[in-house]
Image (cartoon, rainbow, N blue to C red; front, side, top):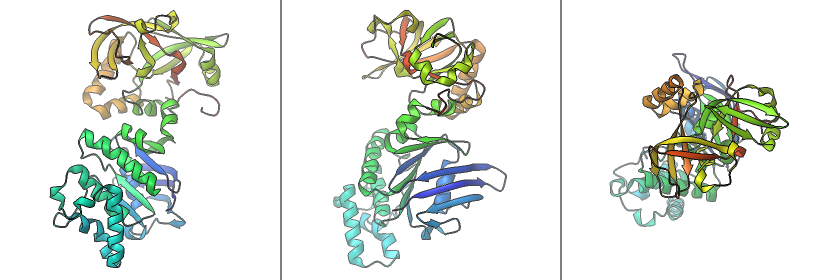
Length: 406
């Protein structure tokens, strides 16, 4: 095993496209790091540069104690797992897993030992004699994993390995890959566009936008302390609600106003974010996670400065909770970060954001207790967990925290 270090790594294609810019990323020995971001953000290019499948324009890549900038892939001692499995259809599972070892001219006894050990880890013992066409998608992906494991590499590189699986299999394979990596403790760089996958698998998550690293930290810290509007909107499902507001601070506490609503900002929130004082009587962007809204009928003693009245326009019953779509009479936030996030979802989402800015209305999502009486077309009063408000500078899009960024 070995650490992977990327120092100011950039990739500029011949047509001038900057796919990755000044990427600094340290992956510790045995760590599982996930690169996540929208389609075309540069995450796969970054992984391919580590693998040696893509040349770098500048910077340094080290695997263990070696600089590998000019080394061919076969000399980097890494193993890749792709989304398309890349299995040989005419070979058995056993032969697919052992083929790379055979090319390296390892003794038959050693090949057999490694293949059977990997099959045991992956639960493939009974499938070793089968051909790939006789396997399910999840089983084929496990064979591809097995082929990587038997090589006993310094690092695993995984490029969207679960994207071809159905939803149920994706959930199952997420946990299996995380378990296997935890057991083997092989340094792993994993690429995905699925932020739920990233949050549930990675020791740390690195968010990339347009080839630039936005933030890298543990999943929970990213969720609770996003560096900017892009990270805030990308991490979390459903996405964070955002609205333009005005902030006023007095006697250590504050008030945010938007769309005729006035929400109290507790003293502990203001004191935990000293930079907020610079925004007194100025515009801010307020972010609120859907789970930090609740049906007021279920929280009868909530004070008035934590309540907003609105109307339910759509109700989604999910069993464990209910997601209510509600209208807020305040303009939708339209920054380059927000527009890129909406565009990644689809053209309709982007148009909805732009329409919301023109109409002066925003749509909020509230994740409510399943006992809620919320009904489509009916008014509802929501209680806001004001201790969980997020604040962003409308000019720069950066999160407003303390002097140390926490």
